[in-house]
Structure formats: C-alpha cells, structure tokens
Amino acid sequence: MKQVKHWQDPVNVALGAWLIISPWVLGFQGVTAAMWSAVATGVVLGAVALGATLVPRAWEEWTEGALAIWLAVSPWVLGFATVENAMVNAVFVAAAILVLALWVLVTDKDYLGGSMDRHAH
Image (cartoon, rainbow, N blue to C red):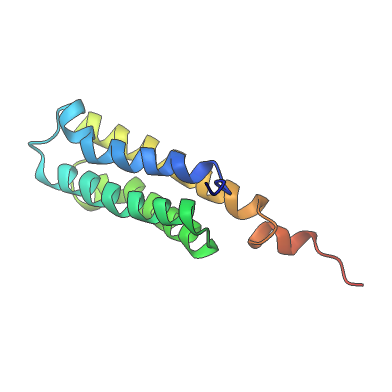
C-alpha cells in the first residue's frame, strides 16, 4: 500500500464529507443556498483532496485554498450570513481547509516552500 505523502489531505477529505452532511447535522438543510453551498463545496473538496491523497500535486492544494476562500465568503455572497449555524460552519471549516492546504504548500520541498530553501551552487 502506498504511503500518504501529506496527512493533511485525508483530513480535508473528512472535512469535505463533513460539509456534505453538515446541513442535516446542524439543521440548516431548509436554507437552500447554505445547504447547496456546503454540499457542492464538500463534494469538490472531497474529490480534490482524495486526488491529492492518491497523486499529490501542488495545484490540488491551491484548489483547496480557493475552495476555502469561497466557503468563507459564501454566507455573504449567497445571503445566508444571518443563519448562524450555517455561517459559523462555513467560516470555521474554511479556516481549517485553508490552514491545511497552506501548510502543505509551504512545507513540501516539491511545492512552493521547497523552492525557497534551495541555494545556488
């Protein structure tokens, strides 16, 4: 079995799964924009993070970061910022996704972070 390169990617898969079920767990399934935003973002995040787990590439981390930014602003863009449980869920999960994606980008020598450590010979 192949070893996972970044432990953060399976965590983002789990966060994607959480987003998919969170409208029903937190009770905002009746708020259409919030529900669909969470489900769609969760599906895309889960797919990208699963891909990053199986075949790691820097673009997957950048995509996760972009999804996190979307998720963080979605309550205001889609008009559900007054639905506290949906808004708080979106913002906190977005923060976790962004931290994990940036962590991989700046610590993996094959990605952005590694290019800053190389010295000219």
